[in-house]
Image 1: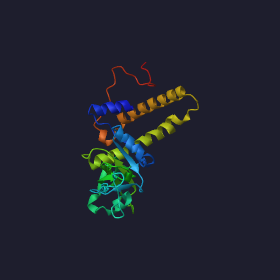
Image 2 (image 1 turned 135 degrees about the vertical axis):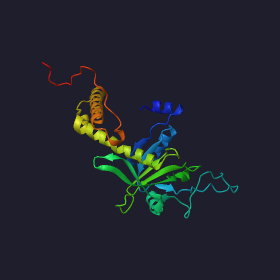
Image 3 (image 1 turned 120 degrees about the vertical axis):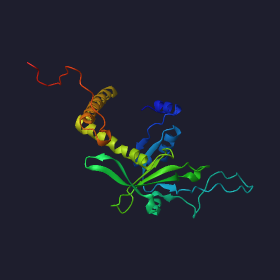
Image 4 (image 1 turned 90 degrees about the vertical axis):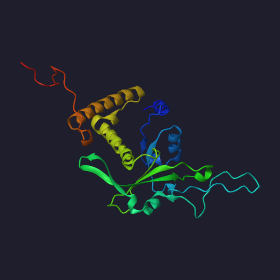
Length: 248
């Protein structure tokens, strides 16, 4: 979706689907700030080293002006009042904070894991700011079989978002990556050897159109469990499938 379309949808009061990205993008505070400035919600992966303020905590306000020099305007932290790395925060959460969520059916059955969600404030260089950063969702995955949490996400979805909604959006990234992998492996998206934009655009358009056709056929004949209520459209009267023997 073009940026202009997303901006128009936001102006019309229609919520846009969140931007999803891995930790390679999610750890870049400027990237997240730019999405927020454009009114685009996100749910992006982050690393274990990302720092946040625990729920209910925030940086201290600027110190009182003592009448010398410029009045202080930046929020501050101290040795005792400081943010935490997300892994340290996750390990401090009580057992009641963790719940098992199933987000979809896979080829080997239901895909589920254990997640916790808390409201936090990102803390990256906030001591250079005059106001604390707003609250965001921190989503953490910690399977029972693992000794430590394995994945973390930050999200600006509304405070009313449920745990299941956050997990569902976070896991959409794997579907997108699978789509790209199938486009490259099965339909030759990465086989283009030209040098011009027009040629690549035509090649990519044909690959995407072919993939859309195959995806529609797959859903029509083998709908996943959440879409099992769908039925393929009726064929027109007299329709003959390509390759079918003609009546004598």
